[in-house]
Length: 111
Ligand SMILES: [Ca+2]
Ligand SMILES: [Ca+2]
Image 1: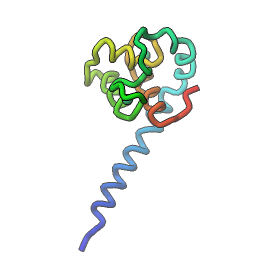
Image 2: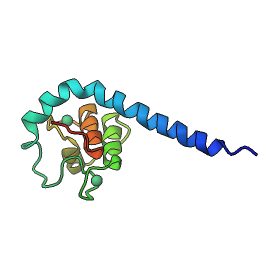
Image 3: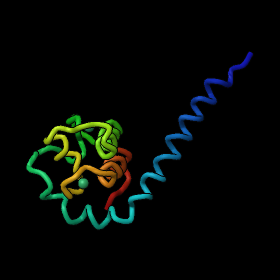
């Protein structure tokens, strides 16, 4: 009887998630602090929570994933979605926004 396969798959998933997040976050953390402070307020005329692309009232991992896909040109956002996804308000949805979105989803302080 082998019953270790489910555990090992779960472990692999954990490693993948834990491994990706810090690398992803640290890669952009240097320019994060400068860009977020200047432009969060005037970035969009849409009265929605920044980063909450699926409009469920909070920024979750699904929103972060969508932002990441847009940043990587895997997915096309509508104008409204792009306005919401552009968290730092620099006019484009890129990895900075994906990182911000991910941090918001994980409740990591972005001050
Ligand atoms: Ca959401
Ligand atoms: Ca942006």
